[in-house]
Amino acid sequence: MASTLVQFRTEDTEKIKAIRILDRLGLSLPSYLRMCVSRLNQENGIPFSMKIEAEDNTGINALKRARCIAQEYKIADMSLDEINTEIAEARK
Image (tube, rainbow, N blue to C red; front, side, top):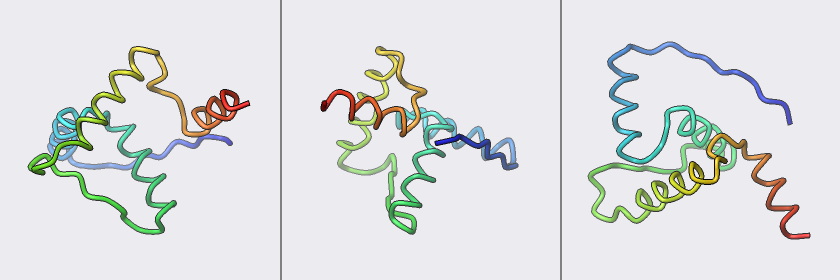
């Protein structure tokens, strides 16, 4: 599946604040935006809420661990299609 570039404009302060929040969640801005678009399409709506103040940080901790593993194995920039292809190959 072909990739496409999506661009939009936002205030510098909004971008900086978003990056700081995502850093605390263990995500990059591009990863978060890809995740949002993918889930929006899957759920046909906004499907989730992730807040730093949440009492149970299990999900956030899992994302941080997954990010570390992805960076360790140098697969952090893989697309969903690339990941699914690797999974399909491993299951053969």
